Amino acid sequence: MPTKPVVTLRPRTDADLDALYAIAADLETWEERNPGRPAIPTRERWESRLLAREAEPDGSVSFVVDADGTAVGNIGVFDIDDLARHGEVGIALAPSARGQGIGTAAMAQILEFAFVRANLRRVHLEVIASNARAIRAYEKAGFVVEGRQREHAWVRGHYEDIVRMGILRSEWTADRSA
Image (cartoon, rainbow, N blue to C red):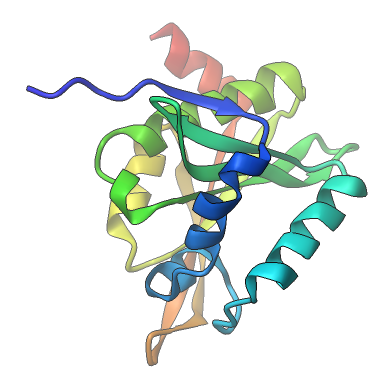
């Protein structure tokens, strides 16, 4: 039985750019990562936007998902509300990194960061309804379905619901104690 990879969250390095751009430019998984119309940026434009976001931080926090020393994705907390203490989490993994527990491990680590380090009391996310595998993984991490936006996304030729999921710090703490 193969061993599970060691998953860590770490800052981005220049050596990660190729792997991260490959994820950003993957048209097959576009709708799983983005709510808007598919528009693959050029490498130069993508890199320019990335560097601009890092130079002018807006309070969001982003990490590279590292599996056994290799960048396989990114994860972060954004749209943080400093008064109400909540934020949205997003994750994107290379297709080759899926189904190995890497996303589950990364999500556990970003939730710990959000609740313990960033002092958030609530974290939420959005996922297309047909992405049942992701929904199961988010439920495994403790997220619950809070609602849905009916036919909100245009995905591969038809409308799909967006499922809104959330987890409270009190629920996360209770799950860890159990």
